[in-house]
Length: 150
Image 1 (spheres, helix red, strand yellow):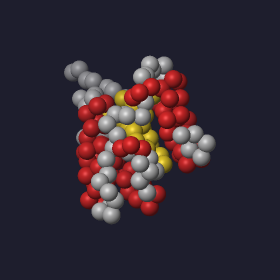
Image 2: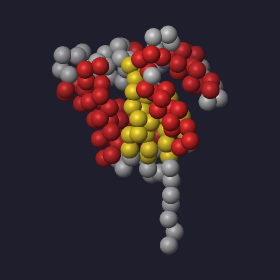
Image 3: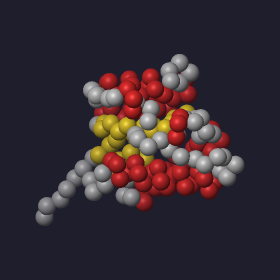
């Protein structure tokens, strides 16, 4: 009997629309828990989440049958809806159109968890743009400067 075994771990990074600093610390953990539920319903798992008021970092385990873009699209659509229903005092909540996704191995998970846990400290000295460019360059990705924050 043939079987398929996969371990598909991704570090996902995306921001609020126009990098608006509207992810409030008061409900941020609830947002991450909701995202975990979205992934579980898709057969995946949220291994780690963190971020600051204008962006999130997620470490997700996905099924082979789901593409990264499908996974991100589902997370964004459902979590935006949840924020808009849960936080009615906010102006309309939206995520940016794009995202960054980096594949990782299990051996890199402890370091990445630590990095994500230190987001508040990290962003006291580095902007989202600086962080994103650093991630893109460390992963050897070419990018057009016009679309780094779009």
